[in-house]
Structures are given as C-alpha cells and as structure tokens.
Image (cartoon, rainbow, N blue to C red; front, side, top):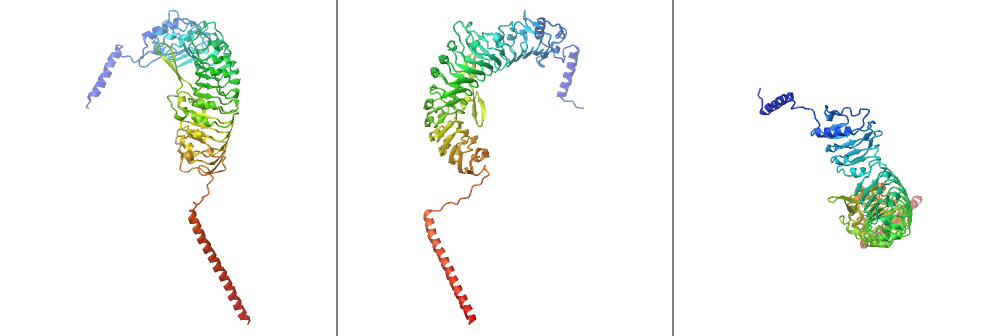
Length: 576
C-alpha cells in the first residue's frame, strides 16, 4: 500500500497527541482562565448562599463547569454568568471585589432573585465586554450611583431592570436609558446632566419633579437634550421653563399630558426641536413661542389643539406637523416664506379656504438638497466622543404610517388631506420638483389636473382621492417614473386611463368611483371612436355622397313607375 506524505503527517500528529495526552499536555477539555476563576470565587465570597446554589463553585473543579457559567470554546474565557431565579442569593457586597477581572464577560443575569440586595454596582462598571445586563427584581435602594456605573459600560446593548426612578438622583453628564423597565416617577437632576433619554419605559406621575425641583441645580443647569416620550406621564407641562434655557431638544410625545402650552416655554431660545405629539393637550398655540427663533421641528400632532394655524413659525423651520387636531381657518400665506420647509403636515383638521398659490416659493421643496435638510445634532459625551442624534417624525405616506428616523432628511411632504379645502389645485404647485409625497385627499377640490404634473420627477406618493376633480387623467402623470403609490379614486374623472404607461400598473382601487373613466386596470371598456377626417375632405365627400344618394333615389322612383305602367297595360289587354 502506498502512503502519501500528507497521510504520514496526519498519523504522526495523532501519535504525538497520544503521547502528550498521557503527560497531560494534550487535554481536549476546556479549562477556564485562572484569572476568571479567581474573580468568580471573589464574587462568591460576597454572596450569602444558605441554600448552596453556588456549591459547585469549588477550587478543585474547572470553573467552566460551574453552575451558571459558560466559557468561550476557543479562548476559554468566561463569557456568560446566569444566576436568575436562584431565589437564595440575599446580599452581595463588593468589598475588595476583583470581579472586574471578568473582562470577557458578555452576559450577566442576576434577575428575579428573592431578596437579593446589591449595595454597589461599581464592580460592573469595569466589564468592557458586557453587552447584556439583567437586574430585574434586584434591590438597589442603597446604590445611589448605579446609573453612573451602568452608563460606563461601553459595549452594553440591552439592560433590563425595574428601578423606581423617583428615588434616583441623576448626576452623570450623558444618560441613555431608553427602552428599559424603569418604573415610578421621574428622577431628579443635578446640574451635571446634559443629555437625558429615558423614553419608552413605564414611568408615571407628573413632570414637575424633573423640572421644578431645583435643590440640586445650584441655580444653573446644562441640560440640552430631554426625551421622556413613550411613558405614562400625566398632568400639565408645568411653568418652570425659565431654568432650562439650555434645552435644544424636547420630546414629551406619547404620554397622557393635558392642559395648554405654557407661555414660559417661549424662554427656550435655543430650542430647535419640540415634540408634544400624542397627548391630550388643548387650546391655541401661544403666540409667545415666536421667540423660539431657532425652532426647526414643531410636532404637536394628535392632540386637541384649536384655533388658527400659527403664522409665526420661524422662516428656518424644516418640519411643521399639526395633523389630527381641531385647527380651523385658512392656511396662512406666511408658510410660503418658510424656504427651508420640507414637511408640511396639516391633515385631519377643519381647515377651509383655498390652497395657497405661493407654495412654490418654498425652495427646499424645489431643490430637495438631502444634505442640507439633515436634522442632525451632536452631543458631547466626554472630551473625545460625541453622541450623534438625527431627529425623527412619524409620517403618513404611500397609504401607510411610517416612522422616519435616519432617513427623514430624504423625505419632503405636503399633506393637507381630510380638511374642507375648496377651489382648484394651483398650477404653481407642480413646479415643486423636489417633492416626495403629496396628499390633498378628502377635501372639496375642483378643476382638472394639468399636464404639468409630469414635472414633479421625484414624486413617489400622490393622493387626490375623494374630491370633485374632473376631466381626463393627464398624459404627463405617466412621466413620474418614481411614483409608487397613486390614488385618484372617487372623483369625476372621464375618458381613458393613459395606455402603455405605468399608470395601468396600479390596481383598480386607484381609480374606482369615477363613473366615466375606462380602460385597464378598470374592467370598463372604452368605446372606439373613429378619427375625424379633414374638414375639406368632409365637405367634398359630403357633396358627392349627396349626388349619388339622389341619383339612386331617382332610378328607384323611375323603375317603380315604369313597372306599374307595364303591369297595368298587361292586365288591360287580358280583359280585352
């Protein structure tokens, strides 16, 4: 039998491993890092364990085989520590703790341990690889700086802990605790906090403890970013804004806030973004807010605001979202002076009058420079790094509600649907070639769609449904190559849907409710109408046709008379 050199090498490697195995040099078992083992034993010393949950943690046994411990198959470092629902880990102290040696630990779960109390979380802050931390059900009332230690974890992506925030004093500069199970009332702030995001939690109560308790502020504060949206907060907006002039971004959306917007909010001269959407706020928008000269985004959708649409919005504003309120009156022409506006959403109100013909003056909707439209903010975390935040809005386009975050600067939208607007659609509108979405549906608009609509090359969503528009669908509409959503239903359009174009690719629902509209995708066929001839040819043919008509009539009459005469003569001769 012939054996190749590679086969010899494999046989030699196996023999060598067998020899080394007998000397303990080629063990196939994973053995944990001694550094990690020592750190875990120190952790065990800080835990009172009357039920011997950690009895397997012995010096004689490989720590990768201990209860709740998992190691990496290649590096043998401890990566997972899971002791949830152990029920018998009463108290942990970090006195002389060296668990910070667990530098490879990615997953730590101590949740749902009855009566487990941790006096300090400082030992957690030294775990640079920690990605998942679960501390739900843990008593942390003795730890006043837990948030500071948690926010020091550079790799943390998921945190679950049901801390009562009303008992917490926030002291860190940068605090991002969104989408956790934080409970209780709002915390108190020290003057050090510059960035606070505790959105999407289970916080309740009023916002007064956060904004009106100034004991820890020492007469100053540095807060620029405040997001407490998506919680269960109630009460009014308070009147304590004079102490928060440094605020740049405020988001109180999706809570249960009531009352009016206080005039003291006009003191926020640096404010660029204000979100009060999805609450129960009411009343007029105060004129005093015109002092917020830096305002770029004003979002109060889905409240109970009334009165006229504000005409004082700063000319540099980029987004005005007033949909689903009780605004009335007409659309102020001052909006046409907002040259940077890319989002105009006043849908679902009781606005009347005509569509302003000056909307083509909004240059941002003509050129649509995405880089210029960016709504990006930079917040320093420390002296070396920044948190980059891009604002977001929830918009209705293409027949659905979409939350635009990182892509908001690519979107340009006008939505005036579900109002009482009348008159024609101004032809100047169709010069807004940078517009992405246009919705005038559910109004009382009349007139025809001009062929110039084909100039809106970037349009992706168009909805003119449920109006009183008439005439034929213009051929220019078929030039919109990016159009992905079209609704012209329930109008008075007539004639044939332009054939051989993408307009026939939309479903019949885009055109239903127009009795005199025909052609695919509708099932109603169009009657064939012959092409009219040249006028002169029609006259000549008409004369010739008349001549031959009378000629044949004369022949017929003469033949009939002659036939009757001959027949009479024949009958007369027979009698004779």
